[in-house]
Image (tube, rainbow, N blue to C red):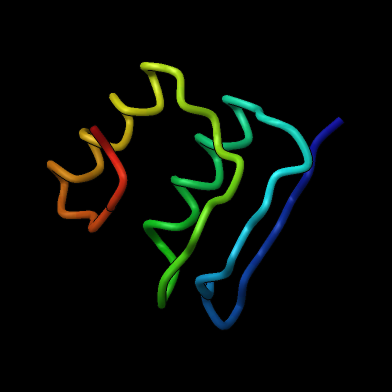
Length: 69
């Protein structure tokens, strides 16, 4: 039950459209996006309060995130 992934050349920003709203998927995509080179756009992302909390936490650590209330 484990998944192992590597990105030998680093992560690259991308446009990600979720097939359905998912808090866990949104959180994981945000965490990967802040480590990626370039811009990442998340479409149909979850909007629960904990997503905003995570975004504000990442911003406080230096991430550049738009669209957070």
